[in-house]
Length: 368
Image: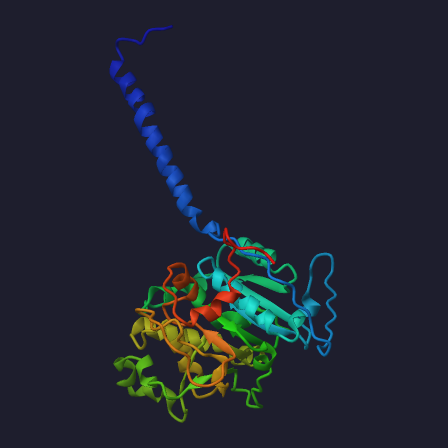
């Protein structure tokens, strides 16, 4: 073997050090960076397949006409279809699965329901996850570009509320096909115990300015949703003049997409968000812009369709009781989510109502 030239011992030692120490470190660093980029490319849970649900004999028939390319435009555009919109992400996928199951299980015409899922990442993964658990589900997935809204978002009282996907509900009219005239928007942290067709059939009246319907809570302190800066500015506080403005929760809404598009309400919401970037007029994420645009101009829905607040407040997420009255929908809005509390063995009493809809596949679960 050739000997090492005596004139270059330092150069040899440098290359030896590089091979033995620096290259392994660089390799480890690159692998670590690669792993961090794929952290959200896997779903940490496996889910069971849900049972198939069928229409009752009285349900209207919808001609599917789905071709070999899975083109379901004719089904989507049918007047008999009930449209449901939800966002999907890896963090809340377990809640979304339970919500979907509850909608189907309590529907008299589950085969007539079409789901519109909005994702901002991992679209194929989430779509495949839904398909595996609901192989007969009629749905379409839409990609939401976070950059559309990320520059408009101001920090709120809870970091989870600052996720761009939380603002996707403001862009449904731009994402969903134009032939869809009405959609029921649902958050991922709720379950239905009643037929969604009843909610979807809510009459919005003849006034073209009435765009959405939702349960209203006029006993809530409406002024608390905006800062003293807002209320002390005469031009801003007059926003609600001649409007009987009440708080409503945006996690359950019936939306007339035709009127929304006609009135360009996405732009109106964005204008308030742009103002918020210049002067702090609210603290609570995506809700206040909806209140600024719609409060006092919506159709009120019975409170049974949004028994909200079951996740407690935005800071501690403590247990809460149901509001008085009948229940059609339970909503764990707030910090505490039922699947998190159940996994931590610290469930609230009402979390037991969510558990039967949990499709999580555990080592000890058995398919019936």
